[in-house]
Amino acid sequence: MRLTKAAQALQNAESKVLDVALHSGFDSHDGFTRAFYRRFAVTPHQYQNELPAVNWFVPHPIEAYYTLKEGKTTMDKEKVSRTVTVSVVQRPARKLIFLRYQAADYFSACAEVGCEWEGFYNSIPEAFDSAASGRLPEFLIQPGTSGNAFFVEVPLDYNKPLPAGYEIAELPPCTYLYFNGMPFEDENDFSEAIEIVNEAIKQYPFEQYGWKRAVNAPYLGMGASAKRGARSAVPVEKI
Image: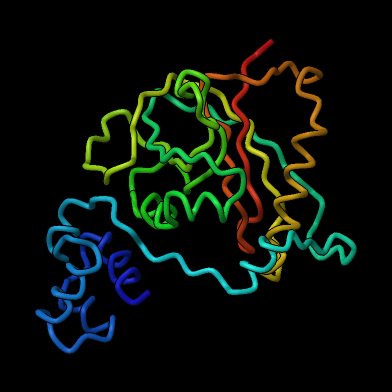
């Protein structure tokens, strides 16, 4: 966590490596550099100059594991507002970095491909939005695969190295409908917040408002956080 916070601080070009090292609890520049390199396979100076994608550590409370594992929700407590806003977002031509998985649920997917994808994606400063999971656009789905992946969208000129297993492809311009739930107080209520947004998508009258679902872009499920609420983006096109 200390090294991840240090990496985030180094994304500010004005931050000095020595100051970041000391603020991160290291006694020396050399010790910080060695620890940083062991974690991210790049020196602090290289990271600050090049800003490659690295595996940031993403902490999740242990309660979240049991909430997902046991499928618990707290709908009866009404701790999360059922208000969901819908916004139209135009996305230009861009690239999609994605990691395919066959599993049917989150934990099986992490067991299959690892759980470092979230920190890796969220370390990319050029990303249009936060890391997401969901279904790939039809032209990227290979025969015999589930069509599911973890992914993030980046600008068309993004060309930094990717770890083994990750793929990258160009996407045409598209329109998204962003479904955004309200912020909530308790981080452990994330499952309920996601369910509220999923239900809103199911009930949304797309055709009534002149939309139909598109297949040239991914469906983005961006999870939920207390500060931002739950978020999902559905690719659409005009009828």
